Image 1 (cartoon, rainbow, N blue to C red):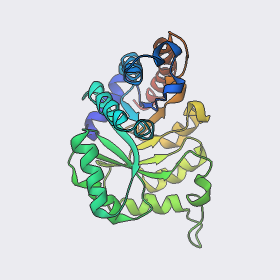
Image 2: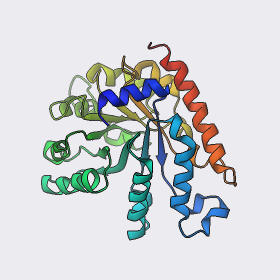
Image 3: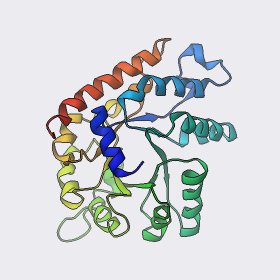
Length: 272
């Protein structure tokens, strides 16, 4: 999905919601756990319940890799089930020397047919650039993550001006990609930092985790994070997937997603 299509979908659906698929067998409703295809059945039910309320899905690879070969099959079937009408983000956080990154890119862009992949920038330009070699695909670079440990490195001043490491990443990466193929991860748990982000990267889309279970505020991040194209994909995973542990899990997931989408629609009306 290219940038113009993504923007059109955001305003058509009045939503910039990305539904995370961090699926754990132990957290599934009890009546599903004994089924042979429990995780895939759960994913399909969540997708069916939220298709019209979101513009993207983000399966987290760790939850599928942990299942071994079967997990890769479930991941692939989940991507196929989502289809072409949503942006599909492989939350894989890859990044290695150039030839290795090229293989990661081929795996997720060509074999798994994902639209985007999260990439760690720590090893520098030659570890990221191979991901840009696939037309129509997105690199989503980790800049300022939502976890507590993000302060250990990402928020450390790098020079006399006080510029933090995540700001260096934002600035430098714009030499590698464009707003047409590069997004940044910026966590909702750092609402005050969105001013800094937009000073450096006013046009790029931001993937924003951290609302819902991690406590980030949608209103706070939108105040300084949005641009004229919306410019944000806000991700919610556990708060939607596990809204209920009962037989009504899909209905509860939809209700939670609808609550977020309704708030997003009100925010988007200010841009029109």
